[in-house]
Image (cartoon, rainbow, N blue to C red; front, side, top):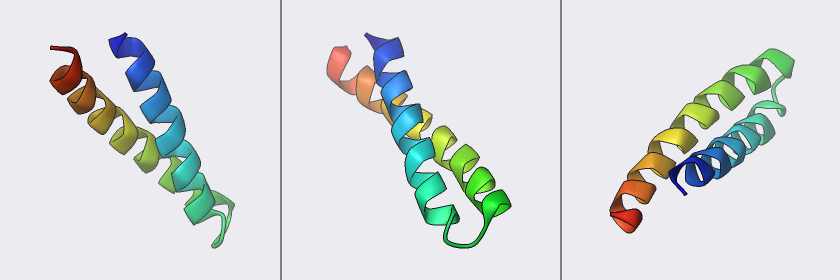
Length: 53
């Protein structure tokens, strides 16, 4: 179940980062997507630890 949380968090974070960054340009979208993915993974792991433990 932990991996599912991480997958969903990474996908959502990357998608949000891309949406924000594409207003400026492709490389900005790419960079913000990477940052969004990392943030999504962090919070997904935190949430999974809190709710599944």
